[in-house]
Image 1: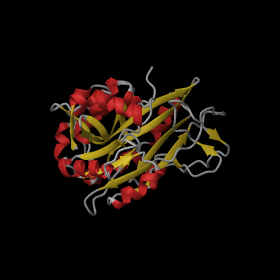
Image 2 (image 1 turned 45 degrees about the vertical axis):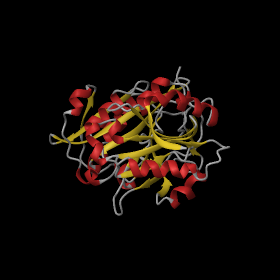
Image 3 (image 1 turned 120 degrees about the horizontal axis):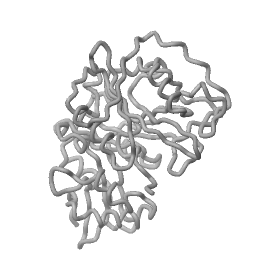
Image 4 (image 1 turned 180 degrees about the vertical axis):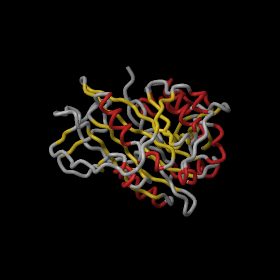
Length: 342
């Protein structure tokens, strides 16, 4: 048996393996374009999968997305996000899944490694591997100009949050990836937290996405670039919502974005904006006008492909050098990717 990083010519076999042993409906088993965009390495002839083969038969795969996949300049500060980790049910090789993980951990340089969207059954395994495990917090902001909601279920309207005492920010939408890549940001303490990101990361991850349309905004105070926000519009039967899927920057910029987010929500005629996050204080989101989702009877749906009106808890695992802080959002890893492609 051989374990190695997969060459690009293994992609058809990996897609077939996922379709047979994970689910025929898994989007990475059917969309070559998405698989290439997410896992085909731009710098060499490989792809971002660790595979185990015996006599040319695939026994197991472990997909991963390095942050440098979206900006090669992050190579020496990489975080590896695990995606599809799968071993054949009838595999006779003991602990093959752990061997795949060990190979990745020992051969691909990184500062952090983790996943967003793991199921509860694997939490003990990740803890044994030294990962921190938990759940992302979900925050939301309702459109107070709407009297009725068809996506969200709002039984009791949350009490309005008091106006923030923070100053406001100047906001500009960025549509040119080249212009975005050249920008310099003053991101304060965020600079030391993993995963490390960059304007180039935002340009490729969001503005170059082959299927989703993201909108990226720069937050600025007194001519200082404080941060970048990525938002995506989702809809179902004529109603829409906004997902804040990533923020990279000084927390003060996010806290001061309340007016912008409320105006954007109303201009888009969306029911709500929501965000999943770990690592930023709840008070920052409160200052920005968000409520933490805790109320019984209130539903802020996460699934839109297909749509399901239910709350969804998103788990995470993460392993870093001791004492290293980390901040991440729903779009880290592969949680914010298509499940249906028409």
